Image (cartoon, rainbow, N blue to C red; front, side, top):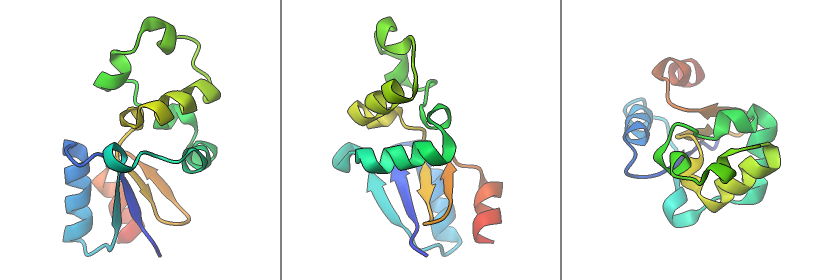
Length: 115
């Protein structure tokens, strides 16, 4: 089972999630949005699985700094466009296991998934 964790290296939540995976022996790859961006096809697949509302990080600094016009009237297409343009607006981490997609870090969810 291929596991990939998506996020930004310096993010504290990412550090906790990656630390959890490492301490529990979960082999995984790390995809850094800052250096590699995110492909539209990947993001659209995530939106189909969990919904754009769960993926768009409205609480983060990047979203809060947007002009009001960009924050208004958000629908799926607009949310995808914003996240493609500024991947730091994607909630972190996103953990993809092939079948499952976990958004955010909750140790109990990781434990349920990986034992």
